[in-house]
Image (cartoon, rainbow, N blue to C red):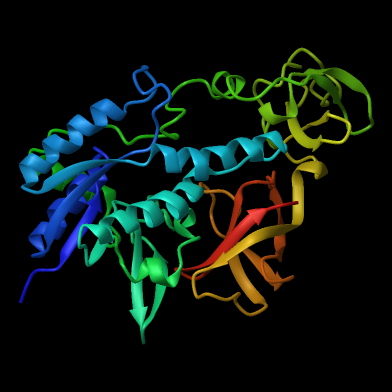
Length: 363
């Protein structure tokens, strides 16, 4: 019987490198695919794609798999980056990783892999897939500190049925250990943070290249103007640094100290940025949220019931009541009000370890 052919996305990082090795050990025919998703300034210090390709090719050599590079920059710009800019222009804070997984890694990449005769695809994400009676579930990774199901919540049955996550059952410390044992050239490479097209550069500098500044007033909840902002797109809810009003003290505590300022609201109609003092100001705490563009892994919304949810990636699951409000709309009501719930981010629903899907926070 012929071996199953698996095409794995190899980024040059340690996770996808070890994933390729594990699949080969399990007896699959493994082909590596390096995705180039950004071209505008990839010769700069901030975008490491050239070095990443060298690392991926070196690893493929050590592990003993063929690798090819494929350019998805046009698709990325069209499906991910343009949406990213649109969201920022509308005053929201999008999560491009969620969009990249849905539109590039599990669409453009999956399609390309199938053209190469793949039976399945694989990535180095920390998550698990479970099949029960022909239905596929997305589960959290065993290593909860690395779990990436949040970023994968838009995947559907067809995509999950073709996907393996070799690291789902393994801890990150074990992955590093395997990489060292194999003497992989990238065994000690730092995990990438941020998004390829931004890299490690200052975020505001990057946005400045694509979005026009539209200055306007910064006001307190009482409507008192206390400064000027450079454009609502450049701020996110809950932001504390870089607001530009550091020297202004409004409310003082009993000991003479004063609480930090936080971005609390954006009024697009009047181009006004509202800030509040104190981490626990009522304007920063949301008892509920509305979401749209819902996507459910089972293909339909879950029943109205109690679940847990994440409203940002690095957050513990919180108890909530789920109510479907239409084909692609839903509401979450929280047992404990949530801090700085941010339009544009994803609200992702869980039932224990099972990721049910989610949507984009609208308010």
